[in-house]
Amino acid sequence: MLSLLSLLTACSPLSFDAHDVDADASEDDEAAALEGDELVATSRARGPSLTVDPDLAGDAFVELRSYRRDGDGVPAWSGVQLYLAPVSDGSKTFSLPAAPPRRDRAGTGEPVVYSISLRAADDDGAPGAYVGVADAELVFFSRGAAPSGAADGWNLVEGYGVEGEDPRYVPFDEPLALRTSLIAEGSLSIGGVPGFPIDPNTHVTVATPDFASGLSILDAPLTGDWSATLDVAPPAETYVDGIGALFNVYAYNDDGDGVWDGETVAARACDGSEEVMVSWGPNAYDLVTALKLRSVGMRSGWDLVSTGPTGTHGVPAERRDLLILSPTCTVASPD
Image (cartoon, rainbow, N blue to C red):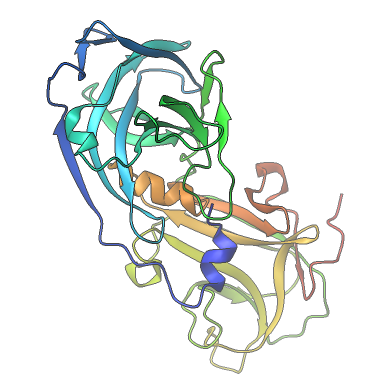
């Protein structure tokens, strides 16, 4: 899976030419039909049952929709909606059809992949923004085409098709957790203390990671304890290939003009021994956007993430005002 850190250190940015096709499944002898709240197969044969356990309180929808990746393994196209069902509380169990709709199979012989996602209800009670995507996906292998460890037909798989990861096959008899992993906050407040000597020319800034020509969205003199609040969407020129925006929190010695314009970085914001970054992602109203956010560890709205050796993960709210501006991220956080 791509991480925020790998995205920043890539030689060239990812490029997408994505489009979303919202098509209904054709009804043939192996297609699926939605009858009320339950998916049933139009043929006599049935696939396995899948139980999904969402963590969203209130009205929401579980969606199964096919998608494909581009040649670089990046989500780039979404297609047939196999299943859409409302959930208000508790888990949801439904039966898969014997095989995917014919339109998804398209005679290619390639595996068919379905994302399992959670959508919040909009003001009218209809499916709205994507607020979560399950770690596992449904993958259908044609007879005789299943790789080692997989079964012909439906499989529930984590890490399928992700470069550098071995697929992990999940049993159908256990409920699948569906977390609201794409929800962040409309505003973000961060702060802490300097962990190095400062002088009257020292500033703190929130800026894009291009050291030579980074764009700052917040800049202020650093006189001691510091804090910052971000509560509006960043300018479009900070976006990374339309996925969202990433920012470092720097301390630097200003050259006299009062703004960040590529001066030497004196320190970075750290959560303990791990550097942190600020991220912002758009609301995901289509599956491809939701999958792109997931692929780089971003959420919709503002978030603070740590980019340490164990991977990218969110910084808990109780530590967001305990950050250290440190040259090496080795200064212990205050109690």
